[in-house]
Amino acid sequence: MQSQTETDEGSTDNDQRNSAADATFPAALEAIRTRRSGHNFDSDTDLDEQTLEELIRDATLAPSSYNLQPWEFVAVQEADRIDEVVELAYGQEHIREAGTAILVVGHTAPETADQVFNEWFEAGRMDEEAANQTKDQTVGMYADDRMGRDYGIRNASLAAENLLLSAHARGLTATPMIGFDADGLAEFLGLPEDKIPVMLIAVGPSGGDEPDRLPRRDVSDVLHREQY
Ligand SMILES: Cc1cc2nc3c(=O)[nH]c(=O)nc-3n(C[C@H](O)[C@H](O)[C@H](O)COP(=O)(O)O)c2cc1C
Image (cartoon, rainbow, N blue to C red; front, side, top):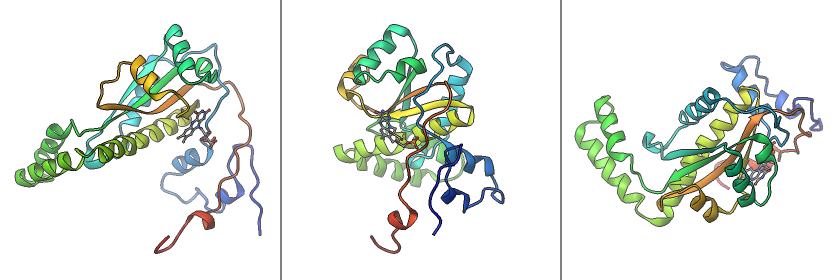
């Protein structure tokens, strides 16, 4: 049996078995396979404004429950505020070196429901009655604390992954983090009560190579068929 060895790009022989060459979007598969949580940033170069906005736009293209898009993003770039974020993230210095920290924020209630279900209706994808009924059901379902929290985390996590892949595709380095004082960061950034910090992302120009990626569990260890 072929062993799983690392290549320069951090992809593995296992990955190569499933060639990107005949895929419809080979670059997308390549990006998925080579993305890393990098810690090596070029601290002399800042992320420019246009790239920041493009990263966020790509993040907003993530799928979400009924297209409710229950996410927002707080970008911190001012040096003294980055210092505070580093402290709240238990001293993770790579945030300072990245120069930009983006908190992906999740909504715990479907506050976009009026607008979004109207868009379903306007686009002819639901009739008015179905749009109203589905909206009421959705609002009711997420009124539960646990469901509301899951709603924010599930949807915003997908936006976070989009942002990571977009950064990678642009040659930037990005690392997702949950190693931070969630209450402290929420307070520092002024999050309202019904918004939760989901993922902190350090992002910036790359400072060079990263260590080889650690092995991934084999498909045979993680894939169950028909039942767990
Ligand atoms: C939910 C989550 C939390 C993480 N928290 C941190 C963190 O606090 N600090 C950090 O440096 N990396 C953090 N990481 C990055 C992981 O260490 C990294 O994804 C993992 O080691 C696999 O490496 P790779 O992303 O380069 O493939 C986190 C990743 C995830 C998905």
